[in-house]
Image (cartoon, helix red, strand yellow):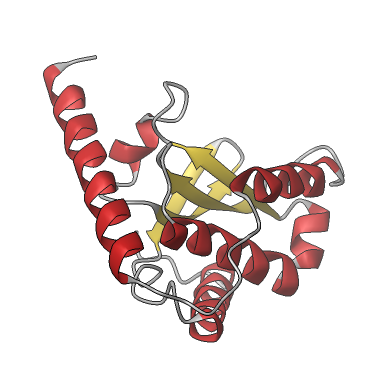
Length: 171
């Protein structure tokens, strides 16, 4: 890994730690956060396994990109995003026009996402694909401020995803 890559990784790790300590210490929620990240990941994999096999040429990827250590707020972001996607876009998921992925960007395999999407913390990123080529992406920057307001969070992610599906692509 080059010097720039090590620097980006170090900064990302530090920011993740600050978010984890700050948000988990100061944020309280009445929402049930007992669903484990492993359960969410397994459900996402099971959902993807039920798709039609070959992915469509054009599709939207919904990524929850996180570090290895996750605080309750990070777990809320994943849980609420997964809920918004599965509750409102079941047909798109079933057809393969949309995919859900929860990935640990601290692994060698997924570390490139930090630079690809200019990440500074756990994030929800929407990606429009045409075959194997990324056409556009959008980082949903309001997931952190809304992480303890379930209804507002669900509405935000749903609205952003609908707009993205309709071609609203800022990048």
